[in-house]
Length: 203
Image (cartoon, rainbow, N blue to C red; front, side, top):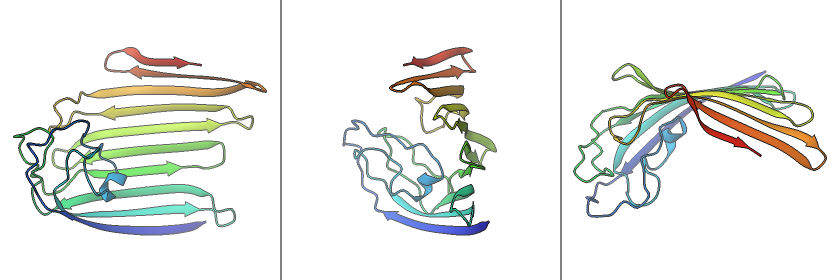
């Protein structure tokens, strides 16, 4: 096996301008994850331009089969350090974000063979000691192309997002070849908090 060690540093600076008189049509604050550490904005859309003076620090490692190049295991962890408050908000008059560092984001992928794959994403808040989000997904692909997936996700409400609710869900999906030109697929999303299926699909 070949093991890599991949440190990353990313500095972002963007001046602060008052944008409260600008309407917000479809922008939102992006879901925080490891990849979000290295984006140029914390907003989706173009209704808000991020004000930033920050340094993102991350490190990753991979285990790669040196014979065929297949990545067997990959892991990343990182955090953002802010050098000033973030005053640009979606809601006019909202308080600036004043924490000096972000949550700690990590992800892990495990692919022991061509049939099985496993992925998890975690976001931990060191300021209050809570897990903000956790997503786990496992998939299995058979030789005939059939796919089976199962997953778990948890997201807790964030203080800066009053519209977000706590979610804890189980998911399952499958894709089945049944004949030369026919395929069957289905999925279900079950809320553990509401104790009911909130989304179902069959095709």
